[in-house]
Image (cartoon, protein in one colour):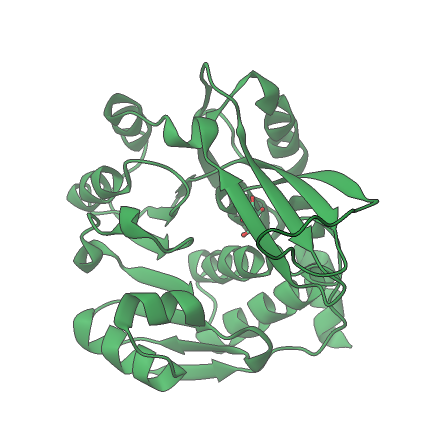
Amino acid sequence: MKVLNIGSMNLDHVYSVDHIIQPGETEATGQVTLYLGGKGMNQSCALAKAGVEVYQGGMIGDDGQPFLEACNEYGVHSDFIETVDDKTGHTIIQIDKHAQNSILLYGGANQRLTEAYVDSVLSHFEAKDILLLQNEVNLLPYIVDKAYEKGMQIALNPSPFNEKLDGVDMNKISIFLLNEVEGKQLTGFTDSQSILSEMRSRFPHARIVLTLGVDGAIYSDEEHQYFQPSFPVKAVDTTAAGDTFTGYFLAGLAEGLGISQILKMAAKASAIAVTRAGAVPSIPYRSEVEEALKE
Ligand code: RIB
């Protein structure tokens, strides 16, 4: 079983701020750092660092060379990444003194996928392979339809949640990985149990993973529900915590581990990620996660 991730690659410009800037306000910052990120790239790196073979698809511009180098470094297959005549996606991220963030996203090359490109990438995969998607690239409805026709298992992290998801046939999704905010946007409910009940009744055959930040995570399928508490840590940067959870969760599934073991591993990986700055560089290797789980 192969894992394909058609997703974003963003150059994250991360600014340390006292507080997240308010409308009309000017705030000085003395520190800016450039990290590799993008939900697609982060999740592929998490899968690879967890030890699973993963293929990253998507578009970069001429300034996106560092993504190819990072794929090489972390063992992510990069053959399906194409370079287009546009800027690589980028973000402006503010991190405040409580490690909260706010993210301004410029899609750039991430929004340049074509149907011909999608067809060509999908032709290398077959039924039962996993396709992982987030909502930072264009053509999601098309990608979902085509992958479903092939019988692929589609895992969707509907993040960021916006109107571009409207055209996606959610009945074709096998695994939803979402946080409480996205759960609320998708179902209209605010508390976790109501979100899950609504998701279960709308998508009875799907596996659902609802992450709740410091309150842990809940997994639900047709027969079982599991709760995983979070591991308490002092956070410095929560960027990519959810991506780390998603990557590690799917890695565990691809390996055929039991759900409670998968949840524990994903929660520990994401707890480690928030203690480190940046997106891609904050994601721990499997050996670090396993070592930390022994403590
Ligand atoms: O989920 C974190 C990611 O969201 C960041 O790396 C940033 O690029 C945005 O896409």
